[in-house]
Length: 294
Image (cartoon, rainbow, N blue to C red; front, side, top):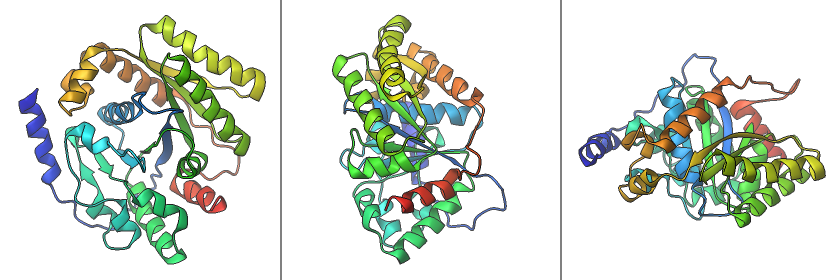
C-alpha cells in the first residue's frame, strides 16, 4: 500500500496549465456535504465518494470549504502551495490552484479564503465567478466539503448549492446535531433538498435506526421528506487508511466500507435529476443564490 501511495502522490507534482473554457455544454451539479458536529468522518466520506464517482466515469472536483479544519489534503497525504485565497485576490487562476491527489482526483484547497468569500468586492467576485465557471464547464459534480455546524460560511454554501448531503453517525449527539442543522437550514431555505448518510454504522439495522430518527422527526415537525442515501460500515480499514493518509477506497477497494461507498455512489447516480421549473442549477444557480443571500 505504501508503494502505491507514493506512486500516486507523485501525481501531485504535475502542474496544471491555464486554459480557456471548453465548448462543452456540461454544467456541474453543486453538492455540499456537511454535518451537524465535527468528528463524524464527513471529509473522509467526501473524498472517497468523489473517488467512487470518478471510477464510475464522472468528472468530479472536490472543494475544501472548511474554513477552520480544512483537511482534505491531509487525508491524501499531500500539501498545497496555493489555495482559494490566491484566486479570490486575483493572484492565481483557478487552474494554478487546482491540485491532484491519489486516483488523480482534482481538488481545490480552501483554507482562509472561504471566509473572504463572504465580503468580496464586486471586482473580485466577478473574477471568482468567471474562474469557477471555467472549471465547472469541465465537471459533472463539484463537491463542497463544508465545516461542521452552522457558521455563516456553511449556511451560504448549503443554501446556495443544488443539494446537501448530511453525514451523521449512530451516536445520539450526532443525530441530534444533524437534525438541528437540517431544521435551521430548512427554516431559512425550504427549497434545499437533503439526503442522509450514516457513517460508522455497526450494520444496516443500526444505520436504519439512526436515519429513521431524523427522517421521521423531519416529516412530523418540518413536513420535510428526507431520503437515506446509504450508510458506511464502521470498518477498521478506514482507520488504517487515515493513519497512512491515503483514501480507503484506493488502499482497500474490497473492504466493507469501500463496498458501501460504491453502493452509495451507484444509488446517487441512479436518482433522476428533477430541478424545479424555472430554477437555475449548477454554478450559475449557485452564484445566483449566493449573491441573493450576500
